[in-house]
Image 1 (cartoon, rainbow, N blue to C red):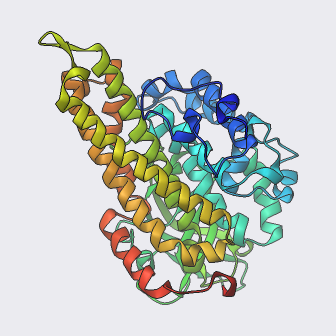
Image 2 (cartoon, rainbow, N blue to C red):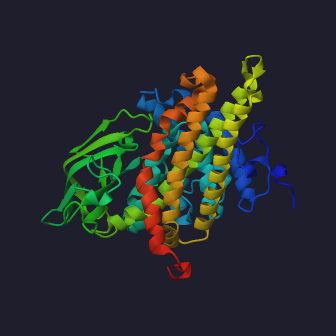
Image 3 (tube, rainbow, N blue to C red):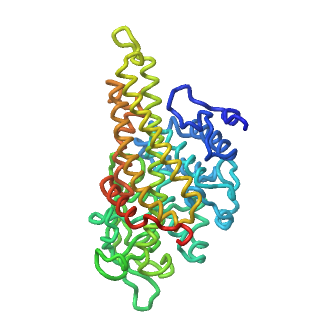
Length: 443
């Protein structure tokens, strides 16, 4: 077979800074289209995002941030952002025939393109840049794509998929995070059945400050703790909707506190069936957790790259840092954890690519939860060790350690969303107990 090296224009000269397949080693997972897409996307990120990342969290001008989002829209990123691992033609048509980034044919887009997409965007080492342009759309549009009526899709998605309107997912509340069943925001159907009246609070809503629509988990029956009483409504920014931007450790994602004060929402904005949103939310979690894993994995490699390059430059007591055995020992520990995380991640991506969404949710939900917890633990360890190797520069914003310093501050932004580490570890074991021995063909 032809050497993968022939497909790679960009290869790092820093050990472990890239995945094995990106360094030209054979892999069973990647096709020609993956190599081409990765090469195109790496250059696009270098040209458009790398310098911006250093200032992203300091930008207060929403108009400037909006220009970046429109750049993503122009290049066709919003379709895969919203659709994830598959891009059905009907949604391409809703977006006016918009081409996908890098010219990937919609019919060829798969789980590994999705993986590469997040991996390369995360090269900026800014979760704010990634989630500020990706998070609201990816998580907010998903329920509409998978469960909304065709009428609701045709009414909302054309503007959302082309960037004319923005959307976010509003589930978490001040007293209901990982415990989704605790949702207490109330939606009461009017006597004439034409609209719902929504009252309640949502917190930590990614991209909420910029959103025109909120895909919102509301309680249409029962009381907090009941799973069956939760429904999904698409709530437009309208009278009674108030948003307040939150100051976050991981800045630049437009994280928002949202208040709904007797907001009237058309009844036809209900997604799917009343009372079934808990099922829809669980359906969406698998891909959300996968994307967090991808970001964490790239952050690990960024830390290794920048710390290794520094160790090759920095002279201490007459020697370069890289000549010190203890430094090589620390780099080796960072590398072994990252390579193991890479292998597990690629295995999950491959398994997901061979299953229906329902099969993946049931059979991969537990392993993905464990992997999400593992990725958060690994990136936390590596960011800390990389910071130590950088010395005083590792405490400095900007300069040669800018990416490591930023990652160190943002690790909790990967460990908590989508399920905290402790919750994910427990969920992984519980799911394994429930699903061990199940036959995928019968799901």
